[in-house]
Length: 217
Image 1 (cartoon, rainbow, N blue to C red):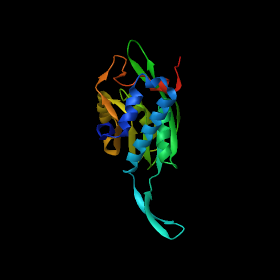
Image 2: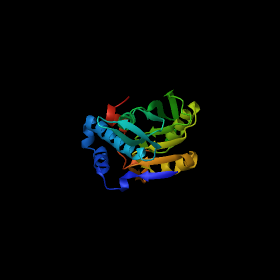
Image 3: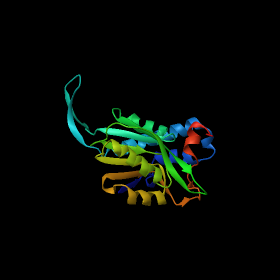
Image 4: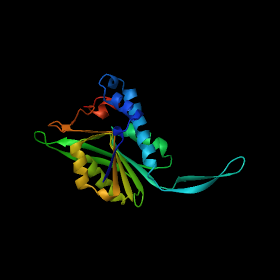
C-alpha cells in the first residue's frame, strides 16, 4: 500500500491541521467544519494527479484548445457523521462523482472492548470505478476495514484512495495487513504514535463528530 503523508511537506495544509487540533479554535464548530472541508479540497487536488487523463478539444470564442481532462469514473464514500465536511471538500473538486455513505459506530462490550456496527449503507455500483473513502480519524482501522468490505458488496473498485487526515501508527499497520494494498493509497496529514485504552488517538484532536456537529447522547 502506498502511504502519502501530506503533513510532511510544508504547505498551508499544516495551518488548517493546526487549527483543527487547537482546543481553543475548536470552540467554533463552523471553523472546524470549514477546516475539514478545506483539507478535503487539498487531498482532492493531490488525488487528481493520480487519475487517468486524455486530451479533449474545447472550443473557445477564437479557436480550439486541446486540454487533458480526467476520464476516471469516481465514487466518494464517507463514514457518517464526522466525515461529512471532509466529503464535501473532496466533492467540491470532483463535480460529477457519485456518492456513498455508511453509518458505522463503535459498540462497546465489557471493559474497553468494542465491535463495529453498521446500521446504514447507501452506495452505487463500484465495479471498475475509482473509490475515495474518507474518514477524519483512523484510530484502529477496524471501522475502515468493515466499511470498505461493506461497500465492496456493491462491486469491486478498480482503485481506492483512503483519505484519513489524522491516523494512528497502529491503524496504518492494521489496514496494510487487512486491505488489498496493491490497489490502494492511504492519504494522511498526520500519523500519531499513541492510542488510549479506549482507542482514541493521542494527541489526535478529540471527537471530530461532536466538534463538527455538537455533542451526542
